[in-house]
Amino acid sequence: MATEKTSIYAKLLAAQRSFPKILKTRTARAGTFTYQYADLSDILGELLPILHEHGLLFMQRFEGTVLLTELYDEAGESISSALQMPSFDNTPPQGMGSWLTYLRRYALSALLGIAAEDDDDAQTAQVPPPVQRQVGVAPKPTYTPPARPARSGELSDAQVNALMNLASKAGDSVGVHGFEVVNSALKRLGMESVEVGRRRPAYLEALKAQSPNFEDFQQAVRDVVKELMGDASNKPAVPF
Image (cartoon, rainbow, N blue to C red; front, side):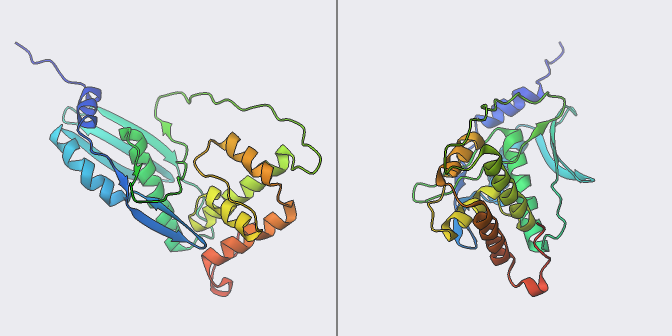
């Protein structure tokens, strides 16, 4: 009598039922702000033995500028995802290494369906993960609220988006998330930081409520990036 084959999805489900809670126990300092995270080695140390117990092999590798995250079973069946790398032009080597580890961590978490939790004794800043594309699966449509006219003295939607894009581009240059660059720049202007962890539309609305001067905010972002990169005399130029 033939033995019924167990699919890789059934094996992953069985493994997920055994996964422990992954806590954010590491603290990172970037300029004037700090945040907590679960280290890649800590996550792998917790999960790899469980995956192996269920006959699953986890791999991450690069094909050109694409990060492939793959899960194989003993029969050769697989689940995979592909993540396009951002440009690392003018990025210091240390910043590039941190950024690659950050992307590997979130690609792993997305493929295995896990999420790190706050340590009970920790104060954290939640960093939204990068967009993950599952191979062979159409992207889920997202809702974009209609733009509304700016009130008197308020930044327009276009200006807020431009500020956020500027901060994201600046953050990419030093391996720091754009949301954290925004908050650090706001502090430099004597304004309250915006809660990190919101969805982008809600985050942009909260940023708009602060109404920073457009030119002052641009300069504050430049100052933050220069601080993160160190002495500008022996570092690559800020790419904006």
